[in-house]
Image (cartoon, rainbow, N blue to C red; front, side, top):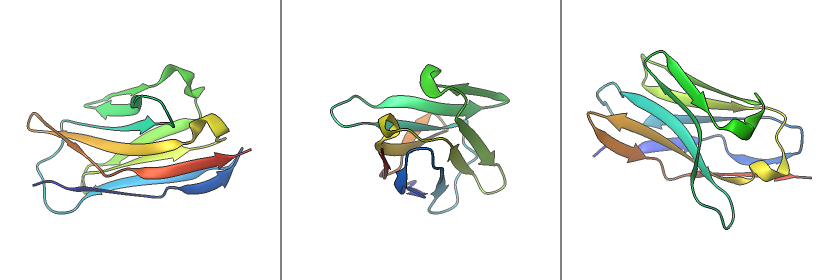
Length: 114
């Protein structure tokens, strides 16, 4: 059973930065895709950023503030978040697609105060 462990969440003031990281708990096959999703209070889970092969995709409303990156040797994925806004407050989940199966982390809370 693949387990993904996220870290890096916390409380930050508007305009601040956070870096989220996600790593598998053990050895895994190389993921076909990795990404970050978030679920704000009373909202549905939504894609924040994803990376697969040589392609990346970001949510339309991020205005270039977030950057997704991977370490292929360690099968980890990170999300650098800059100029955070109160509306970025959410639980952030990492996801990896491995051999056709979706695996999710447990989520990490990001709270942006105004």
